[in-house]
Image (cartoon, rainbow, N blue to C red; front, side):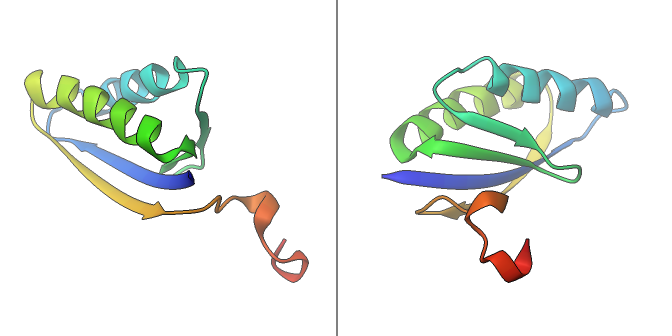
Length: 89
């Protein structure tokens, strides 16, 4: 099943910018998922189980190396700009 996850990371540290950059680059390192940074959040598209596996690993890395919060929205389908109805593009 293809899924879309929108995720926002909130590192609870003074070095928050670098923590976010590092997190997104780790996600982009997985060539089996699509990662699109959309300003206030990052959108991931791929096979549901793989997305959850990748997020579990990468979020755990940040939890073990400092405090952080993550906010996720998960859809059980592809919810990207390309899949919007034409009148919304």
